[in-house]
Length: 635
Image (cartoon, rainbow, N blue to C red; front, top):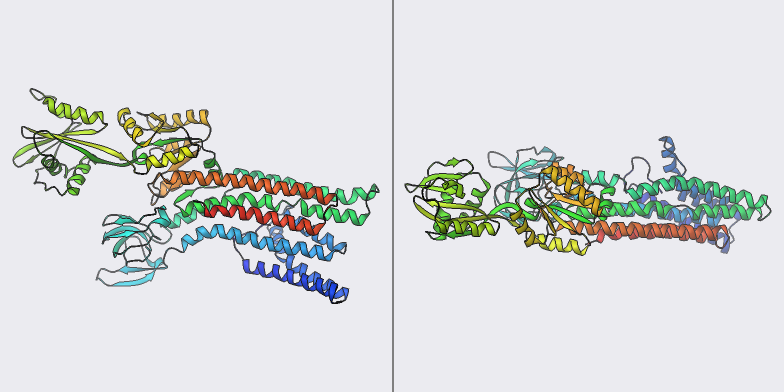
């Protein structure tokens, strides 16, 4: 049951099914005609031959293509052909053609099932519209084929339309449904400067988008390519099964030959009985279900993961993810938002709004992340900021500028280390209070007036605690934070999200060594990071998981698993899906090997003939495929 070289997962499915049904119809006509209507035997044989030709057509065509390609080896198809020809040679036309009918029908069903799995990914390619509404400098727009849209072009996306390109919003505001790319269930608000992805659905507002990725360069195109490559890679279990099949099929052929020849020579059975049982053994021992059970599950698992914003780079990685027992997590950008926010404004000699206004006036000129946090907070609260003079940076201490004719100084306590009399006690106490809560602190002084102290921290992701709890329920433990930050900040975040163990002050090489220690202690270890500065740790882990890979080609290519959104809540889904995939693989192996063992016994002893063996054999094949397809409904 294989594909000819170059075929896809659902080639000629209608032709396969039509030939199989024609085989069944001719078989039925021949049997009814000969048994009940008195059709002459030669005519019935002609109908049986025609039926067998329809049933064997695709099977023979596939094998001829493989032989021409120079890669032929004894396989399942050969066992089926020999069994059918042998049955016909014994005059068992009904059983021989019935075998080909069921085998061809199962083959058509197999390709349909595989098409269901790959179709889940192929459908992503159909999400992007074939055209885009291009905006020209003179103000008019024109609908053009997507292939004509180049990088830098301006595209108009109307309400409720799908994004045709990756790009940056230049004008307009709207909420965009990004579920096809990132797996996010809630639409994301987009404003000028925000990134959008092809295949996502625009909401109620019109957007003008500057193209950063046209056809072939879009995130969705990369996803489809990577998933196709992942589905082509074989999992460890699949490789073992393939090696087993390569040995098992020749052994079956030798065993069937011995069963045909030895008993008559020893006087145990007549030749007809021995040949018939040899043909039945070929059917019984054909490992169709064994060959299909693992790849069908892997294919379905990778497809379902991609549909929910999780890219798994191959079957081996999916299996490894299912065996993870411990988890290492980077802090900044993984457990936290990766963007500092103002958490506290402690006033000393002014109102909190005054502290924020003066600080924002100065920091608006700075590109430092802490300065940006102050400006965002002031803008969010609608605080009116005065004009400030040119910014002066004081290395490793802070900044200063003139506001309302007096110097404003903002920085750490080191800024005033040489100040006669030092810093007032109430200012030092405010700083200590915030630092005890793991805040970065900035003191604000205007002239000789100590306005107050601003506390800034990188906040935990809202979904982090729930996600780590879900991972523990899956049996993932311990969960360890690996960070280069100081221990006080790391411990504060760890307590908020529920981390088991914290390792702080780590360089990239230290993180890799920590992963090696966890692997020696627990076996399978996953590492979640940003895919760039955590690269050594990601490479050292059993499975490296990159966060927020949408639009980031480097992260897509570097990690074993890539989360398309910045949402750690996708990790429990990914590990749960991987474990369910492993369970289904084991179930399929048990079903396949159990049916093979049973059929070998009952066919060689003559308990059942070819007909019932065919039904059980093909039935087990369909069962394992249907079992694998359950993964497409995993939530």
